[in-house]
Length: 312
Image (cartoon, rainbow, N blue to C red):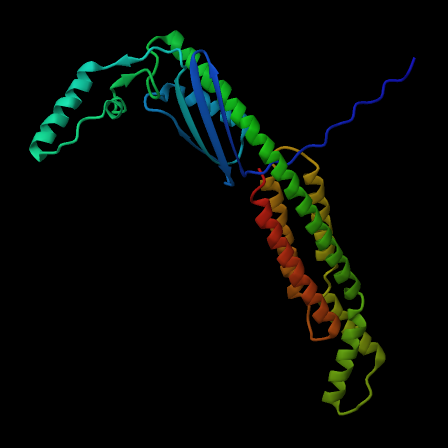
């Protein structure tokens, strides 16, 4: 009997907050259209637009959205009208009132144009049973509600496909920039090890200028150089930066609402980069190179923060 191979676990996916989708369908005698547009936002901000009189479906549709989307600014447009087999009701009294008003205006203005019947039918209220006309019975209202639910879920599923594709592209860019920052951090670490001799040379030169060539005790020079190097030590900042980078990469492998967690980590990374810059003294070539790398790290962190704003 052959051994059963363990099922491969699907890697969690990151979702972008940007996307657009639309869906349409016919169900229970209704033709429904739904369009969904999503952009980034700190919280869930939902704008739901429906035909007049459809307010009774507001809560149920909003609940469906909350089940799928957790963050982002969403604009959802819902339209519904009876299917082709639905009866058309003509409000003759209202049509005649429009005609009388048109005739009175024609006589006052002496206009020669006649009323177009097709245009008359398009006036509000002349034809009942089309978009904006709510069913009269609770049973028919529920049928329409089910049609709206199905079409909205279809549109949200398509939106998720687009958000998933955008999220995948975002994660690839984030990983590339993380690797770049990691390389920069290690370059800074390498330069930092050369600073103590540079501090000693700087002190020796400065003291000789001040003392007029008097010999300097090597032990005292080494002690002063060590104190200066200690005040400028950035090993803790570099260790924390590396730890934050590892946590960031680990979060990208997870699921759920990542955007806020990633943004918090980037704030911490930005703080470490600032501290590192403030501790890099002098005009030695090593210090100048470290300052340049620290500035590049800050710039890449800012770019990461811009990209993370679009992750749910």
